[in-house]
Amino acid sequence: VVTDSLGMEGVRTKYGDDRVPVLALLAGVDQLLNPPNLSVAWNAVLEAVGSGEISEERIDESILRILRLKSGLGLFRDPFVSHRGVERTVGSRAHRAAADRIAERTTTLLADPGSLLPLSRRSHRNLLVVGADPASPSGTTGPPTGTLAHAFGELGFRARALS
Image 1 (tube, helix red, strand yellow):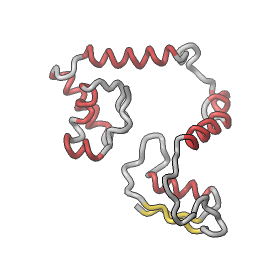
Image 2 (spheres, rainbow, N blue to C red):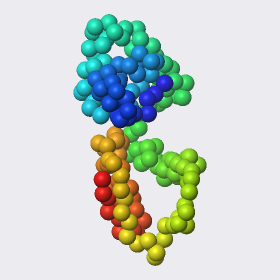
Image 3 (cartoon, rainbow, N blue to C red):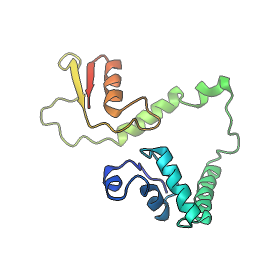
Image 4 (cartoon, rainbow, N blue to C red):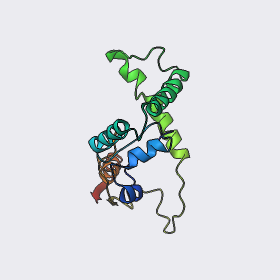
């Protein structure tokens, strides 16, 4: 069981960054993702284990579930990639294409009342990407609006981020 993000504002406001990871583990979560402050989350879990609020056995259960899943997927058979083989194994063209196909199938446009999509560089050359940016999600190159504006720039648009 994996959290999608410990940075969700609702639970952070209600419980605080130091309680959210502890409560998630107590609820049965095995893997905690995207804490707003890693050291706060880490120390909160350590303190909860130290005080007995979370048992070491509970942590061991999560570790075993994760390791069993990885083992079942064959991730331990040959886990290492040579420096020369990285481009073929990690982030290859085929992997990126598969990620694009998955993303396309999981995105649904609910409405386009102005018939603006798909965007055309001829009619919509300048774009403003607006949003409330959290801290940069792990694994990304920056805040979501900046990352999206950069991606539009690579497609030939003039895009600016505003958060």
